[in-house]
Image (tube, rainbow, N blue to C red; front, side, top):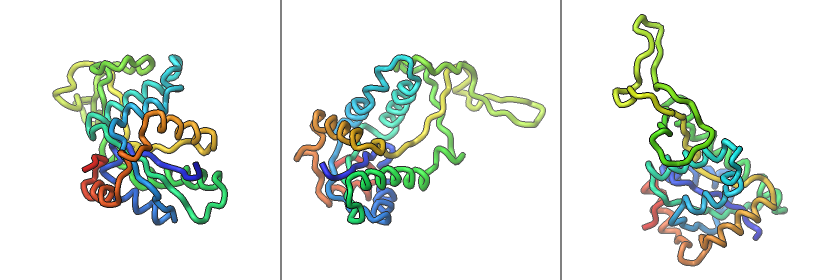
Length: 215
């Protein structure tokens, strides 16, 4: 194990061509690409520690975000294996890859810059959420005399409306041990196997289709 990686989540497929450009502009080489046929199984396994902590509200956000990504974009993802000729040490490569994650998220901000907002009524989902309790109506307020109005006729009933965002990619923390752990999980889940390895033609097709689904 001398390469770093990023995971393209299902919601990242829509901007895969843009992610690819940023990867290459930052001087990275893509050495291999693997399909993740059942993305949520791998993603939840990578976050097993957070999900097992009943006192951790992060677990609720993970469940909610996984549900949203699967519902809108399906359940396939990609693992992109990376190298960089300017990184002589593995730790340098990990640090540069970690920075890459934020460059990508800073470039693609559609659900964080006000262009559109995603609100999910968690009360209607069977996700066993423990910590997200914000019951009420989703409304729009204004300075006009009519005061707050319901955002949509479909949202007249009170619910547990929570904001959600597209994160596009996953990258382990800037830690050799963390990366080793995540590689071990991917091997256990049989993601990094020959049958999942994609050809350059298949990867280019994903970029053209703006999707993580393999032809």
